[in-house]
Structure formats: C-alpha cells, structure tokens
Length: 587
Image (cartoon, rainbow, N blue to C red; front, side, top):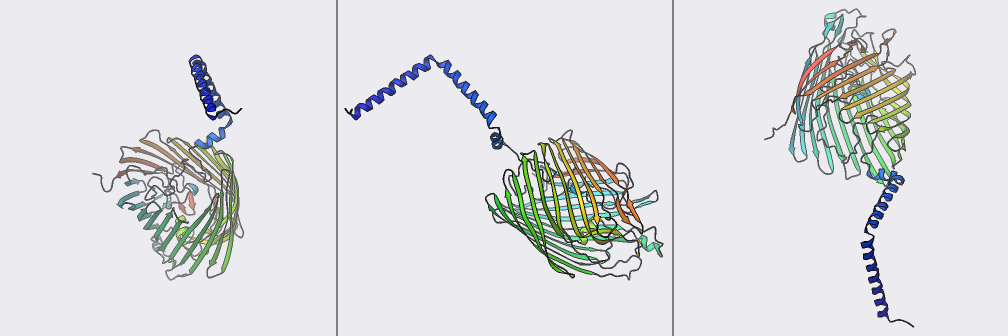
C-alpha cells in the first residue's frame, strides 16, 4: 500500500528532529571527550603532512631559487621585475683599483667586482678624492638629475694618475687616465632605454729598451703616447614585445702615432615562448675598420699605413627548454665573415645543458660552444697600453669550446662551481715584445692557433651582510701550433676578495691576485716570474654623507712585472674621502 507523499515528508521531518535532539544531548554529556577527539585528529593530520608531503611543502613555500651557474652569487632572491631598478648603472671604482701600476690589467672574473662600492640608496650623487705616494691622484664624481618622470640624466667623471719615480735603478713610468661620460635613461612600464656618450684618454710614457744603443736618447726619453676613445652606447630592454633587447655600441679610437679605428657592434634577440619551450633568435653584427698610422720612434719617416676592414653578421637561433630539473639551450651561431683576405661562412655549435640532480644543492652541466671575436686596437690597448701595432688586425675564431662540470650550494650562504674544458682558437692574437728596430719597450701582435685545456673552481661564502668571501682559481695548459709557447699567458690564475663589515660604519676589504709564470721572447726564451698582489682597504662612514678610506696596494712590496720592462709600483698608500649628496638639494 503506497503511503501518501505528505506522510513521507512528515516522517522525514520528524526523524531530523530526533537526530537534532540526540546531537544536543551528546554535546551536553560528552563535551570534553569530543574536544579531546578533535585535538587528536588535528595532531595526527599535522604529523602526516610533515612526514609524507615534505617535498610538496617546500615547493610551495620556497622564497628563493639560488642560481650558481655563474659561480659568483651575491644575492639569492629572485628578480621579480626584469627591468633594472637602478635608473643609471654606474661602476664606482675609487676603491677598487686592481693593481696600481702604469697599467691596470684585467683580473679575470673579479674584474667587475667592486669591494669598496660608494653606491648608497639614500644618495645618488657622490664626489671622492684620494692621494698617495708616487704622487698618485684618484678623483671620481657622479651627478644624477631626474629631468621628468621616467627620464633621468647623469654625468660621470673619473681620473687616475701617477707621476712615477726612479727607485733602485728601476724607472716607474708616469701615466694619466681620465674619463668623462654622460648617461641618460628613459623608463616606462614596458621599456627601458639607456644611453651613454663619453670620452676617455690615456697618456703613457714609453720606456727605453736598455739592450739597444740609441743614437739620440734625448728624443727617445721624451716619447709618450696618448690613447683616445670616444664611445656611444644605446641599450634597450623591452617587456611586451618579441624583441627583448637591443644593443648598439660605437667606439672611435685614435692615438698619438696617427693610428685610428672605428668599431661598431650591434646585437638584438627575439623570443617566442611556447609553454616550457622557447625559440630565441639573435642577430649580431660587428664592423672594425682602421689603420696603423706610423711608428715615429727612431725615424719619424717610418710609416706602415696598413689598413684593415673586418666585418661579420651572425644569426644565432636557439631552442630553450626549461623545467624544474632540466635547462637546455640547443642552438648555433652562423656567421658570415668579410675582409680583404676572404669571404666565408662559419658554423659554431652553441649547446648548453644543465641538469638539477639535488634541488638547490647539486647540478651538473655540459655543452659545446664557441665564438667569433673581432680583434681591435680599442680592446688590445686596454689590456696592454704599450702596443705599437705594425700589422693589420684580423679576427679570432673559436670553432668549439667543450666544457662540463657541476655546481650548487651547500646552503644559502655557500655556493660552488667546478668546470673543466677544452677549446681551440684559430688566429689568436698574442702580445709580442719587439726589440728589433724598436728602441723602446713596445709590443706588437703575432697570430697563432691555440689549443687550451682549463680547469676552474669557484666558491662564494657569505654570512648575512657581515662577511663575503669569493675565490676563483683557474689552471691552463696552452699548446700553440707554431710558437714555442703561448706568449704572456699564465699557467694559472687566482683571485680572491674578502669583505668584512663588523659594524654599520666600519668595513674592511682584501683582494689577493696571483698569476703563474709567463713566457716571452726578447731574442732569447725567457719567463716573467709568477707574482702575488695583495691589496687591503678600510672604510669608515662618519655619517650618511661622509666616508673616509685608506687603501694599501701591493702590500707585499714586490717588484713584479706583468709585461716585460714595465714593473708594477711597489707598496702604495692611498687615502681619501668620499662625500654623498642630493642634486638638486632637497628642501
């Protein structure tokens, strides 16, 4: 017999009422037991989460992803905004002269690291002055001015000079380096444009070769050479387009012996994202054109007047794959070269693979790459200002550079990297000492193919903002094709930087740079001895605007040489003060 629908509804409602009454009675009688049961369930659930899903919790809550592929990791926080926060990037070098001498050689991977930066968040402008023995003078100044919203300008002045002296029958030649650069930045939500326009000049006195008897030494003693560089730089970074970057660099070089050169470098790349894949297409072009002028050492009538015109254009396609464990760049560099000797295509592989074995602890990497380098007087004289070029310049080609290694971090404050590799360089430019028909200590360029094996280790240790230690050691095995040995290339190179901030006002820094023996020929086979250069500095911040500093260069007081006949100045003490300020002044 079927029950009426209304009867069913009444029965269901009545049943719910009885259940409700039972629950209320249960709460009244078993209140304490119920709360204990809830606490127990919560505790068991928490234990299961902690024991069984540890990886998932770390992945969700991690606040940083350290990148140690570059070996020198200062900050481990991710970059949220791909555009730089600083409107005008400037390197402040008043307290980071690597070697105080008649030249300032590069220091490998440490060249761009500044242990005594004057950068402050509070003030964008500064002026600094320091003086020391050998009548050294260092002067730096930077003015920053916001023209409008998103548009800013800056002016950077840098000077470093030494009068030198004669000590223990060793002549330390004087030198003068001065640079003035104007900077402009324009930034909005999508783009950042950076412009530079500047000049830098270097005055170096040429040294007499003691092994050559001169006919007219008074004229030789007064010889000096000036290297001049005028440069224009345009750099754009873009967010919302497939074009991600555009770089244009123009440099005009000339010296006191009528040498001149024009250098143009252009590079851009496009990025097409496809999920975890990305297609990257780079375009690069270089043009180097110049002449060797004349070398008026013993006879002003000697003229070489050799011209060179080297150009290349390259297409750099690559497929990029990135996930939590694997990062791969599968690409190539395809160049077309043009100069007076040949026109040809060059294919260079560009493959790099990084596998994350233990999250943030251990990664292994391998790859094969290479490059085409346009040699220029601008680059060669930066490393050795005593260049007296007597032949045309031609590019160097690295058809392959095979490498592999591992890197990682023991903790957020200790990262490491170990790399070994083998590269082959065609027509590498070596500095070559030339005493024949050159009555001064001067250098020319000689070309040879070079097979080079290398082993690199790098460590970075940081303890908060108090301590930072960087170590970089590289061993080389060089085998040229025709030269007896690679000229002026050390068999090992070591750099270290130690920075300690015991208080907010006081800081210490120490740099140690070492290089192995270097082979050269002066009619006979010779070696320059290995050297170790130790520099120590201390800074004290008097207040937010004034800082006093004291630096000691070549503390070991060694009379070592990086290039033959040009010794580095012995122990130097340099003291000065830096002043930071607002421009225009705040009301």
